[in-house]
Image 1 (spheres, one colour):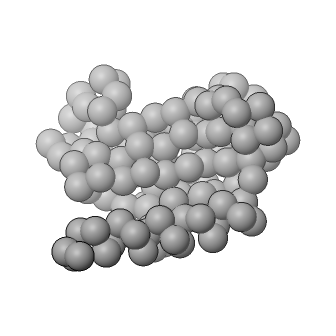
Image 2: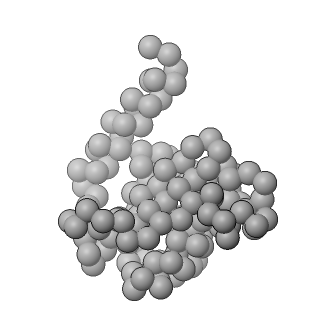
Length: 124
């Protein structure tokens, strides 16, 4: 088993443990984070209905105009995505969420995204 497979399986185990306790409801949907080496993606999900209420990523056209820098895989891009998802959530009438870090450590890009979403008006 190579190192990449081990890292994925460990993240998968952590993610399953988190999802046992974290559920998105219509009153407090779940903010799910996925990060790849090049980009970061975030969705606000109502698990009871099985629907994505809003989403943002570092691939969005309005975020790639230079506000996120050249790379979508850095903290500046995560901050831009966090602000964008907060604006979209508030426009959709969502102010309180449950944060699902997706098995990643609360560090670096994940932490930058969460802090930007809080600064944008979302309550965790």
